[in-house]
Image (cartoon, rainbow, N blue to C red; front, side, top):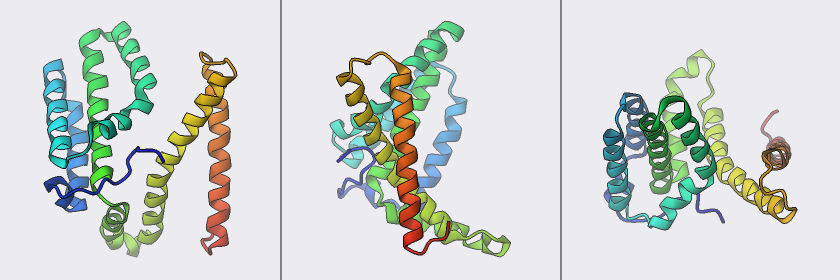
Length: 200
């Protein structure tokens, strides 16, 4: 099983925080990343994230697993930023994105998916009068959380098959099979939902 964003049971202050509080803090942190403009600010932000992981008593291997699948993307983004904007901008952009991914993963690692879905459903109930179905949105959130781990696992399988065929450096040989497998997974998921009484 993938260790990506899978709840890690611990008795820590971060785990005991309400799911709604953690989601609000995540939104605030996402907005704060736009204010980062210097490498030292990024280093400070990443230091805070590291302290939060330590407070949550999440194993460092699990923390690394959260960003390892994005390594190639972050590397390519860093190279592009160095060329067009310089190394300082590259550190700010990639470091900010890295910190945000780690924070989002920490929310999932320290919060049960059911608690996250419950917060979303409760928050959207006032919108029921304008046609929003909170339960349906909650279902979409639950499926989205689960699908992240599924797609990462599909990417790992495609990468292994790519290496076995000797096409290790071909982006097309990776992207096309991944898209096809993801679409097939989506079709199977849709059929399962319809079979269980959820309309199409």
